[in-house]
Length: 401
Image (tube, rainbow, N blue to C red):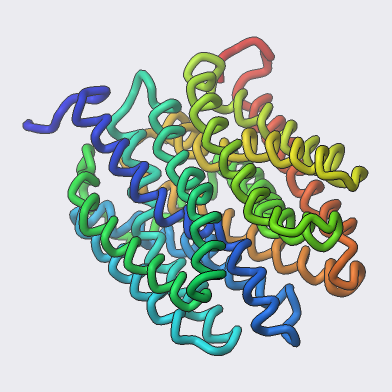
């Protein structure tokens, strides 16, 4: 009876808390490209495809364990779930700072951070849709933009710390940041809708829904192509274009574009419809990779590709929760998003490591052609699947969906 209304001041405070938590959590994942460069120097005999697994497991782990995090949010106090996840994710980074082998980093910085990070990601990404109605897409876009802002400044900060202190201390400082943020802002992550417990711990019934399956498949392929530019554009600018010091700049350009894109596209989605906006963003992301990045080997076109891709691709994260809430309701939104995010796990596991293998085997570490083609095709397939979903829901191209 005492639950504040939707779209109230309290609702915006929840959005603010989500923003800050995602800033340090997803920001850590988005700045992994800077760590990847250090690991290539530290472990020169280890294939790049192996080192890429660290970043893939960070993001993939958060999505894979998201289905369990969603259940925890439904059954327990969401604030305690976020608090525990923050302590665990921060501890994983602290432990990884003492690791001396790629395998140990894969387990700690990759798997453990991803597992505990899911307890931050799922509540933070689903709460805005519970608390907002009129400006649901905008609020979710603002919250998710926190990850891009985190990636923006953390890319430069991590690079500076790596140069001055070494990557071991960068990991320690990063870990303490996650812990402090969780302790400070987890009290804001109060869920608005309390649902009765189900007999089934995890309900896979949504997989029998055709619309959910189409959304699942499109998310799988979009997630597969999403992190390739974040991982491979930074080393590409230095190894192929021979622009020393530009790796952190490219990472920051991607994240800066994503910051603006998630908010602007979120605002447009409240008027054009979230599915229409996501479909348009997916098509433009495909163009950024296959039309701009692939054929041209110049700094100008790479920057243009990074700006367009960053601006458009961020809607994959910001609009999916809104579409899910609109199609399936908000009562069990956390567990539904957790189930949907399994597609992100599959996509990230399939694309990034395979893209790294293509670079090692066919590109000999310097020719990124097949890596770029592979990532671009993933977004192209995602666009086609979203089009099928759009037509399934509404055939008229002028309707808000």
